[in-house]
Image (tube, rainbow, N blue to C red; front, side):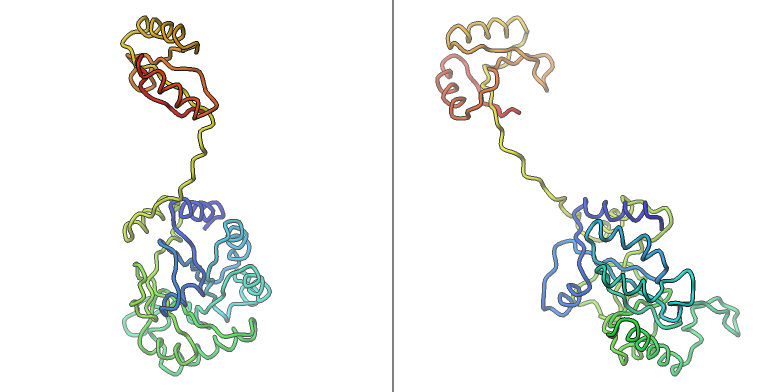
Length: 302
């Protein structure tokens, strides 16, 4: 994903009324101990590529968005396309949580027998799966000094063996690639997600994807400034000549100069009104005095 695309996604979701939450908010809410705002989104980033540090981190800071980065621990400091341990520490310092994407299960193999291209999980025995989970916890401790409690399943592949092994190493939440919303009753080890990492996916498409599953969130509203000036109207007229005649009459009777303008919506009619009056109280007083000569309304103006 490019920086431009990620920036557009964050901006579009924010403008559409979605609210980003932290992993800790998610934990507390899932346990029934806290609340989250309406239309809450937990942002997750898989694979631990170096772009999480070079592209995602600056934009997450720009929009003040928390996130979870799932890393493949064996690749750290070995694969030039992957985060270094220093970069992982900088992610945490920058407000992200770093969590497990296994120690070394994020690759595919050709399965003996049927020749299928499958996630390596499907050819691993229980002992190998348990070893991977133990190594992931150990490497996490070496880099960050604590233990992971979230796991993103590589390629979305998981089974009872992996879930059990993960739990035994302190994992509380397993993230799948199934599409859907999360509720408090969603199984903790089978959390669905939405895939917004498709090449070329626009911000609008991300918003539309979420809104197909959730009620459309209300966009944030901005309180309108209080009008600073007012006009008092003298009615609508079917022709400009009639409006000019009425304006002259009102000016003569009241001492206030009246103006004629085309009505903004009804193009065939003309509106007679005063100039801008700075005091609302004065405008109301004038309107009351002019009721006997056809005054119709007071209109806020800027």
